[in-house]
Length: 562
Image (cartoon, rainbow, N blue to C red; front, side, top):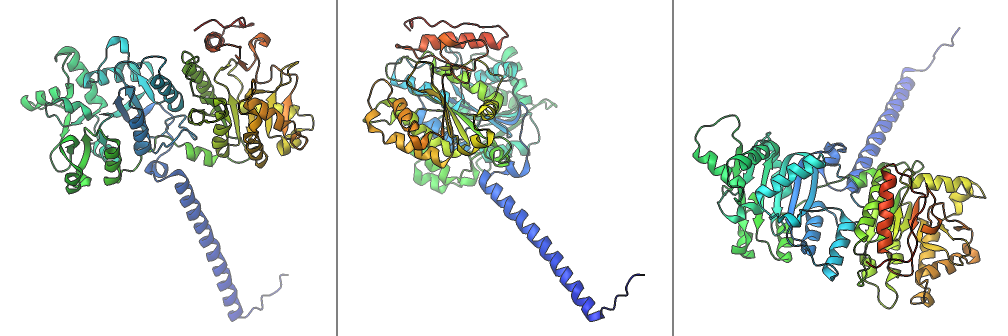
């Protein structure tokens, strides 16, 4: 028989009140935690509606395709556009995949930069670091015209690469467009049969325009069948055609043009800053002839331009559980020395590494700035500066010199670390607790190979890099330079348990061409002379392996001249 409840009504009321308050506190604290967590994630990711309203876009279809037409030498303006339009200040945490509603590229046309020049070296470094430049065929003498942009998009971007879109937004590099306002204006039409532009019948019509995918197909059809293929402004011709052709059928595109109120263009060449201040920034969609970088920056500030997110890189990194998969960045040099030795192969070598990184969801970070700024010591010391700048953003970095070629792309760096962890003599737990630096040393070689190495983001690693930086005796000492400093610091007694030097080893994650055997991960070409011709041969071998061929040996004679 259950005992009777002799609790008085007052005590029962007090008990119920306490339970109610406790439940309220639990609900309140849960909501507070959720709110703070959400705010923290939004702040971490930046102020962008896509994070809040959309999912990662893993398809090849984008709502907005942005192409910025540029000649090859517009280095500074391209950097300004990356930062102001897309919030990309550097490539330390790169966009490895465009996974929002927006895809962008710089459409580079015109004469190529002469080889073996400072500008050519800078241009190749930019291509390696950003991977956002597409080059139209210089041999075909393609110019920047509305028709050539639409034709290239249809044949190359969609036809060859399978990238589709709803709206194509185009500007030249000397124009300024409020992307967020233009995106909204296009979206509000709820139609891809739309053309947006100035339609003034002038050359400037091509400097800023947008077209829906349906209208783009119509425009290309008319260009191929009706209009003069040498005409400069195809979309203006279409606008004039429909203005004079009164019949209105279902195929007639919606034509949005400058009207002085909602869709206003500015010719900055004819306006000074004082005049711009009189304009209503809310109505300005585009400005053309913005030739000065200071004026471009002013326009971004005046219009309070908000960057458009083109990848969820920060969101991906924030969502990876600590114990699941370590974040690894592949680093390399994108600096081409003034002797131009590596100019023929540097970009191709970077593409080899980038494709591998994309396949296994590693970040890929080529760096040139740290090499270019070296003074008083050998330029190769830029490697140490670059690693110091990047390492705090990742769990591990995996450095690969420019003359290293990846041969076996099947195994990820996470798998490789797991193999090293499981084979560590003191066991996996000891590996996790103490190993921070991993390099290999070939047989009968007194020096470790610093052309390929792992470095963990840890307090010891930061101290290790600082000690290496302070090793002035190696600043200009042949032949090892920074490699000699790394070896000397790593072999100190207090560092021995942190430095895992594989010896003798030429197969785990790095080999030389004379030691190569089928299945080896990467080959380091380091001849006495210029390695470029060897690297090109290695890249050719890597391509054969990718296509299913078996490569058992690699050529390693004297380096031929470039």
